[in-house]
Image (cartoon, protein in one colour):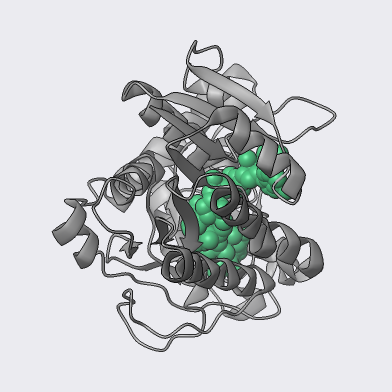
Length: 343
Ligand code: NDP
Ligand code: GDR
């Protein structure tokens, strides 16, 4: 059993590779050529040197490289996790985001169509496609209204996956995944930014955490469980679209409080808008401040997903509570601070 996982250096790529290796797969994991190596997540999971893991240098925007990748690996399944995945950056780099996140997946779909239409394809779609709230909770049939270049690019790739399914009978699956986090989350994303900063504040190595919009509400789950959902989506009889979510939503402010509790810091918020601060109630120190630098030109205010279809058809259910997730992330960051590592 062979699978390609694009974006293996990212959070989900690392967890999915571990899952597939545990299931006995041979995994071709793709990474980009960079000036310094970027395998820390594979190392943290202990799979960097696994005998059935082959790391392949690859860029999603290159059709010829895509054809060679598929020809060489002859996979049964392709999981496309590669993307410019940071919403904030997509406003600054809309064209690059469109090329990688939007058109990139079409290279894979074309390569599958040309070389072996029996290959099963997973596209990492996102709750960002829902964008401006049309209905809650969001399901597979909720209308889309993306609010960022990233969301727009993902929506294009989502519809192309469905189009290849309907036009060429390709087993193209789209997983509309709500935010999922873990100790392996990149530090630019808000949950990890918070847990990393609070670990450093608790250790006396940082004074203040600066954040943007504290009112945004997100449905946050645990990444290791979401990659299992991806796998299940490719094992069905017919390709389809599925939402993975927890059906619980909290504000960024609430996540700060939860993570603070896990770090041993009780945080109380006061003030409004840019003047809002979070204080450590034990000594009155300001530990959280709002900075307009982290606001986005357009925001997604509220995400909450209904994973009912995934539960019914895939037997998939989220297991980890937000409290457990925050604690897991804070503890991992505190251990990193104690070790003096900085991932
Ligand atoms: P990450 O940002 O952690 O990982 C993205 C991966 O894509 C990295 O391995 C990155 O490589 C790679 N990549 C970026 N550009 C290219 C390119 N041009 N060619 C090849 N590879 C490239 O994202 P996550 O693991 O969090 O997410 C995985 C996928 O799921 C993404 O597509 C994301 O948009 C989507 N998604 C994520 C959600 C989440 O909450 N995590 C929710 C819904 C969807 P490098 O390390 O070199 O940058
Ligand atoms: P998101 O995740 O945009 O939902 O995309 P992110 O963690 O970046 O933002 C979540 C919310 O927090 C608000 N926010 C901040 N965000 C960041 N990054 N930094 C801050 O300082 C900050 N302050 C407030 C944001 O405005 C936003 O409302 C993630 C990515 O993984 C996507 O690839 C994925 O598709 C979606 O989740 C589902």
